[in-house]
Length: 381
Ligand SMILES: NC(=O)C1=CN([C@@H]2O[C@H](COP(=O)(O)OP(=O)(O)OC[C@H]3O[C@@H](n4cnc5c(N)ncnc54)[C@H](OP(=O)(O)O)[C@@H]3O)[C@@H](O)[C@H]2O)C=CC1
Ligand SMILES: CC(=O)[C@@H](O)[C@H](O)COP(=O)(O)O
Ligand SMILES: [Mn+2]
Image 1: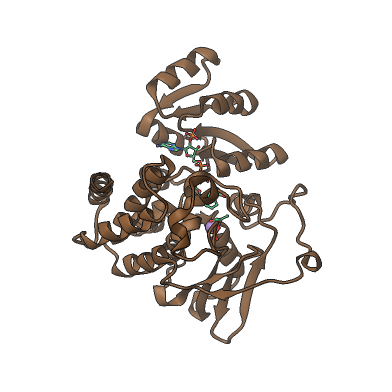
Image 2: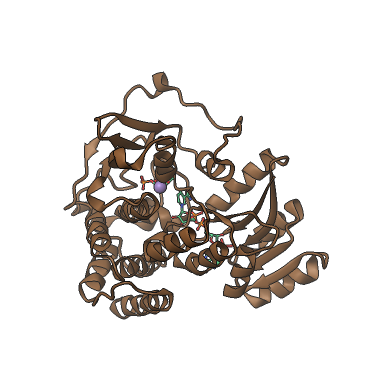
């Protein structure tokens, strides 16, 4: 039995994880959840799954919920509540699907508490991958990828020796604006940006896909998860999102993982690894129906955010923290209709240029730099 603490239960990954728990009640039990502000959905989740602990963002929501449910369910709130959910004594696996670097601290606490981590929250690995991976090593905790590309690579690597890997090939759909020129990006709307061609996801990651920052974050995520240098991590434009990623070995052999675009598959694999469970509700891949798959070279001039990500990752220190925080602040501003789409990458570029890197940052340095970066981006709006 997997006893799951689900951080970000009300989100896109969170609700798909709940689908899996519903489909396999004999395998999975939900013991703790965290959510942000979607209290209506929290009520439904609590009524259906009866978790033992529920964390929400505000004190007011927490107090309201406490009056509505039996006293054997504990309601907590805020950053401390998120940590309480992450370290819940009955949880043996924590699925982190919150959005943004707010996921870092609870992840570190869950690792210290010896919990297995299924990680969807890529911003945590981007902002402080060195701290997360060192903590996992020290506490002998597995970090299992949920992100579809990283799950694909992880599946391709089963039974393989990392010394024999010559390259990772991460596939990118190209996002909502893959067929537009840079000039045409000046006129795009929020609604167009949120219309991803292949995946239905939360709004922040959908915008990241459209700027190609999602792929940049995934390159850094892969660097930490698979312990490979950046010159061994490539990105390939593959508009169908059928091949989720590939691994090339030093004998020239390439192994890929394929499937219809359905996040429940990598989520379930992370929860059940090293075993696989049936997933009867998933659509099977029919390659005859698909017919053709397409691949294109990634254009670093067109997709500036991918270029900045490689540069920030290679530079290391606090540079990836700044990249991530600047991106979070800029994407929020775009989602709030304060800036046009094209300004997201301009804000990131300007913020990176002005940053004096601190090497080997500890947790409090990371947290300070993250906050300062967000403040700086706000001064530029
Ligand atoms: N969606 C996808 O298919 C994929 C997502 N990922 C990654 O998974 C993570 C989650 O993405 P996704 O599910 O799309 O995101 P969503 O925006 O759909 O969900 C985010 C979740 O985090 C909660 N949340 C937001 N802000 C806070 C906060 N300050 N404190 C606590 N909880 C908070 C939200 O709560 P509420 O809604 O209640 O406010 C919600 O439960 C991201 O890192 C993303 O990059 C990776 C691969 C695929
Ligand atoms: C489903 C998933 O893992 C997303 O991260 C996905 O990769 C987004 O698609 P893009 O390839 O457009 O970024
Ligand atoms: Mn992905």
